[in-house]
Amino acid sequence: MNIDPTQPWGVAIDYAGRATVTENGHTLAVRVFDNGLGYTLERDPFTGEYPSVQVSAEFARTGTGDATLRGYGLIVVQAKDGVPAVPDPTAVQRAVAAALADFENRRAAYASLCATWDPAPQQPQPAPEPAP
Image (cartoon, rainbow, N blue to C red):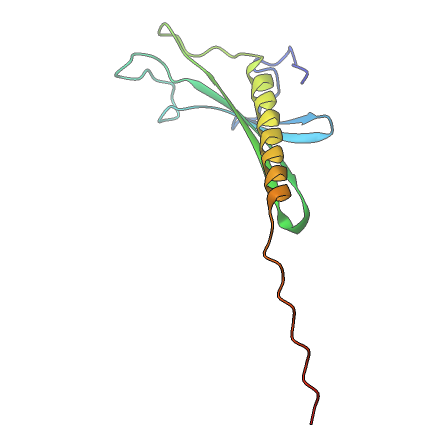
């Protein structure tokens, strides 16, 4: 993924912390959010630290029969030394890489499951009896 050096998080995010990343012809959903309880950024009363910032990415592909396979990635940027978390331009890139790796792991597991699946053989249907 290419990082946009003009953006603090490496990708343009909207007012709600959402972004869309296109990677190799696929679209990934990205969210940047903190785990604060309100709309103001306040220190945790127990630790004295500001909330961490979480960067999540989701990759989904829909197949036949309304089946959807997804991959998720999550990166946490910690606040430290009593200072709010600083934007990390590589956090989105790492979250996208984690989502793609998770998707590939799930795809391989699903393919393995499908290869070993042996549905019970169908019972033969009795031939209809001739009419008298």
